[in-house]
Length: 171
Image (cartoon, rainbow, N blue to C red; front, side, top):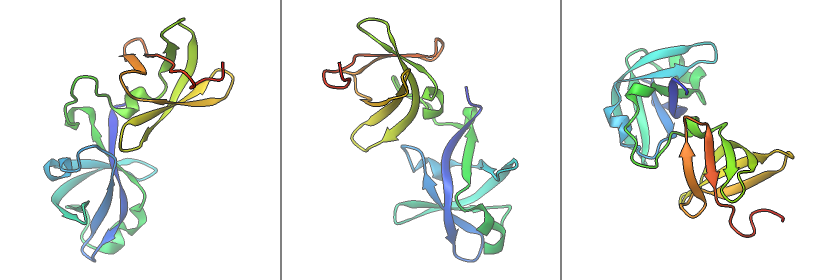
């Protein structure tokens, strides 16, 4: 399992005092209000940053870090990821998973136990997530992350058991 979980990315600078607009990668953007520290992936290292303040501008988090005092210090970090450690992550509810934990799991058919492939991405569509699965033959299929389709997620075994709904595969 991943030690660090991405909660956002620096979208742009905000003002001249070193504040940054954050593109959130979490279901709950209010979580940014509670953040005390994050790790910035600079491309070379993960740099610990201390959050001084958080406000929202047009429903987008704007963070101020202790380590940056002007726009020039943060300009180079546009599009860089912001991470928290697993123990800083918000608690998950029943049948909720971190995307980082799902990527790479084997996807197994419920009806015959056949391995369909590996989960390669989770698309967040608004209504429900969609799992992108790369099949053994190289083709990709999209599975809706709904109860009728996703039957069981077993992180210990590294498997997701799915019911293949009619029309999802060319059979």
